[in-house]
Image: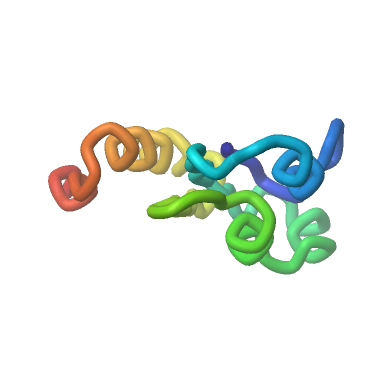
Length: 92
């Protein structure tokens, strides 16, 4: 899952996790910081939100994009880590 703020449409993640069995599913996150200063101040820390409300399953992780300009590189890191665990160091 990726995003720049808390859920603002549809069912919230906590309700989804309560409704269905996620015991064999891993949900990783890509949090985008700095997109909207007003939005960011209203939701103090997107990384904390993702850690508390989005990540699920053993080995789940979060990748952080500091802004939308760094999203592409962050998405590459996230996908590589999901496909080849331990491969983040290969992207240097």
